[in-house]
Every structure is written in C-alpha cells, then in structure tokens.
Length: 514
Image 1 (cartoon, rainbow, N blue to C red):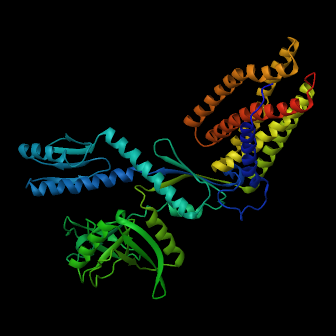
Image 2 (tube, rainbow, N blue to C red):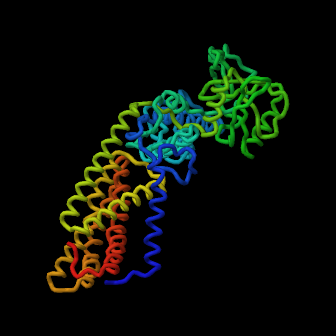
C-alpha cells in the first residue's frame, strides 16, 4: 500500500490536534477565564434563550420630512427670483404651490426640478405646480434609509455588549433583531425607539411663542416644545447637526450628571463661529424635535466640544451618550412583533439535540462494526475525530450554533461514514478479484476517491446555495453542513488511511478484516 511521508503524517496529526484544542472549551463548564480567541461555540437565540424583535422603519415620516425640506427650498427659490405665489404647502408625498402667471410658472418649474435628484414637477389645476419624487427615487431612498437604520441599530446593540446579535433586513422596510441571552427586551426597545436626532439652533429672540401662535412668524423660524412643556421659537436652519459629532460621554459637572460631546473639525468650526457671533443669545439643543436645553452663550466655544446639561440621572446621561455616539436613526422604528425565548426552552433544545446526536452516533458505530469488523472500529475513531474538528472549526470561526445547526451536525455524522463505506466496498471487490491485501487496500482509497469527491461536492454546492439565498436558521444549517462535509472528507480519507496504513505496516495481515 502507498506509504505516507513523514511530512504528510505530521500535517494530519497537527490538524487533528488543532481541532481538538479549539473544541476543548466546549467541554468546559466555566470559560470566563479563557482568552477571547479560545472560547466555545456561541449559542443562538433558540438554544440559550433571548429576545426577538421585528421592527418596521416608518418611511412615511422620512418622506414627510423630505417634503418639508423641499418646501423650504421652493420658498427660497420663489423669493430669490421674485416670483409671486400662493398656497405653498407640503403634504405627505408632495409640495403644492399656485402660480398664476404662466411665464413665472414655467420658470419656477425648471428651477424646482433642480432642488434634488429624482424630483419631478407636474402641472395641477388652476395654475398649480406639484413637486414630488419619482417612484425610483423613493425606492432608492427607502433602501438607503433601511440600510442606515440597520447600521445604527447594530452600533447601539454593540454598545450594550450583547453577544452575537443577529440584525438583518426582512422585506423592504423591516428589521429583525435577535438578542441571545437577553430575557428583558424593554431596555433595548427604549433605546431603539429613539431616533436620537441631535441639532443645535439659535433661539429667535425677536419672536415669541405668542407671536407664533398668532401666525406672526418669519419663514426662517419655527415653534418647538421643550422637555418641561415650555415653548421656544428657534431658527429652522441648525447651527450644526448631530452628524458632526464624533464622541459623547457621560460626565459630572458640579456634582450633576451631564453629557459631554465633541465635534469633528467641520462641526467644531461651525459651532465656534456660531457661539462667537451670538454671545448673549440662547442656543437651543434639540433632540428628537424637542428642546432638552437652551443655555445662554456666555463666550465663544472654539474647542470643538461642549456639555449638555439638564435633569439627567447617571443612567439617562449614559443612555443619551450611547445614542449620540451610535448616531441618529434616519427614521423612527416601530416594534411590530416581540418574542422572548426562555433559557429553559433553549436548554431543552440542546439536550434533545445532544441526545439525537448520541443516538445517531451509536447507531452508526454498531452498523459499521457489524458490517466491517475492525475497519468499522477504525471508522468510529474517524467519526469522533470529525466531531472534534467540526466543533473546533465552529469555535475558531466564532460561529453561532442554532437548532438547525445541530440538525446539520447530526446529518454530517451520518454522511461522515459514506466515504468509508465506498472505500471498504471497493476493497472487497478488489479482494474478490484476487488482489493482495496491500494492493486491495490501496485500490480502495485510490479508486473510490473520484466518487467521494463527486458526492460531497454536490452537497457542498447545495450548502453554499442555502447560505447565499437563506437567512438566519437556514444559514446556520448551511454553515454546519459545509464544515461537516469538509471535515468528514478529511477524516474519512486522510485519517482513516493513516490508521489503516499503520495497522497494515505493523501487523502485515494476509486478509482484510472486512
């Protein structure tokens, strides 16, 4: 039989040893003292319990806000070009304005089309123009907003330290959030329910809330409420927005919790100029369309940093800092569905999965020993090594094991002996054809190799297809199936060959024990 080189033997044994090494933490009860790179397989939501949230991105609010911006731009265009107009107002999906003069209306139409990409201007009744976005532009906006929301949700969840969360898109405007190990999702729902859109506006000292209620309010200002129920008149255009924030942390000032923040270079410059030019005026700090603080600017703040004070507790200051660090959600999120999986149910799933694996393993061992004798015992060793290699690979990759993943492991336990069955049956045929023990054993490995590759390659392609097109549990099944196929091909051919070669070399039998 073909003799394995020392280098090949060393590589085989090294791979087996590495697999066992990374699989060891899965047999340990307490792994908290182990380094991060040497940890057991992460358990999914269905195995260790946790919370599952289905969120919907409220696109109507985004489109309405976008149309409000278009309204401001249209008003500015009309005033700059001295075009007389009536009834300019923004709806939920469009902006309408009436312009009686035909030439002025034609001029306004061409100017409105340049407000933003995807804008179209249509003629309405009685000299009315309708400004709106095309369907393609709205679809692109929807995709962009959902992608941004997923990224912000991921940042906020990561800040909480939740281990191996699953955050992914579902449909066109929904997000699935799975949080293994988290039994109480109320805190997370509170954090995800806040858009955390921060901006800084100068308070309009020339107007009062009473003036605004009477309709005496300039187009550049708007009325807004504060946390304590008071009202402010602030400039529509922010001095600087929250997108320029680079850091936010909870701190203490005069023994009271506050939130310190820091701008990037552009934001710091804008903030410095605004405070320098408005000493003695009030600066409104607006969070989610509500004034949380409106201090008087005492001096120019040129360092690019500042402090938000208010009626904070340490917990609320930490929460606000977390929200500001992770960024503002482009749209509000609504919780459509909430499910909590208890840890007990997860433990039951693990126990049943392990029981099924053991039963399957015992059944395979009994069959192989009865069918192939000593070579069946050799196969048992390779199957056990295959399990170690699978667990080691999953642990090394930091993969998350779910219930479908356990199903993939159970399936690969059965598939792990397929290659050995092909090899041993080929050996039997060669023995019947009169070949010697060594020649028959060598032919079994050489001739069955092509069939083994073909059969496993088709299954591997199916696993990749499941992983590419599937989501969540389906992907978990595909990952364990693919890893199981790779490790079973290695153990069934390479490890089995090493064991049988060593046995033949040492004992030199005249007959194969199959």
